[in-house]
Image 1 (cartoon, rainbow, N blue to C red):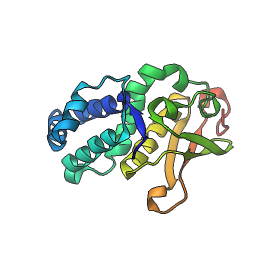
Image 2: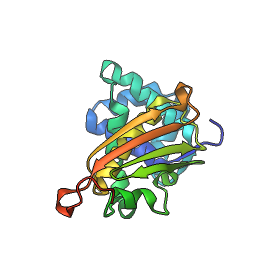
Image 3: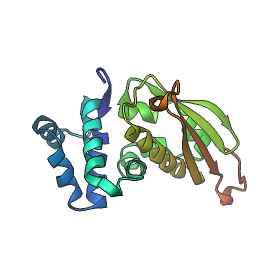
Amino acid sequence: MPGLMAKGAVLHATLEYLDHRDATLRARVMDRLDAADRAAVETLAPTSELPYRLIVALWRAADDALGAAREGWAEDAGAYSIRARGAQMYGGILRKKSPHEFLTQSVSLFRLFYHPGDMQVVDEGAGRAVLRLDGFDAVTPLFCGRQTGGLAAALALAGGDEPVVRHVRCALEGDAFCEWELKWKAPRASGEQGKAG
């Protein structure tokens, strides 16, 4: 994990999600962190740069705290992050005329939250696209789940109806890279049902 970095906004969005899900969850998660990590989590600003390993520690602590209720939480947290903090901080990047415009813009949403690396469009067609993660080690499937939920929320904010995102290849499962398959419908009002942007 050396050299992998994230923005404090990722950490703050995770904490906000924990509060949103259960008023006691944040305290239970924080209790699972070691003292140094807990102190860092409590003091980092949303605009701070932090080692990605700290985000991973927080996600793993949340996963442990959720116990039997853990299924799907990372996807939910990713979607919540984009709808709440992402839309607030980067509304101009997310709110586009179409998912096509969002996916092909010159500014990378991924690079605003993580580095090094990027999400690249490697295939695109009417109402669909495939994104590939290049140059960033996910380390945990919780990252992959978070991206899945975040991408679905981003597609919806960009005007895609009924977005569906599937994590179809995973480097953590032996694939050469992580890839996500995205599908959506154009809004009915646009008269372009099924077209990409």
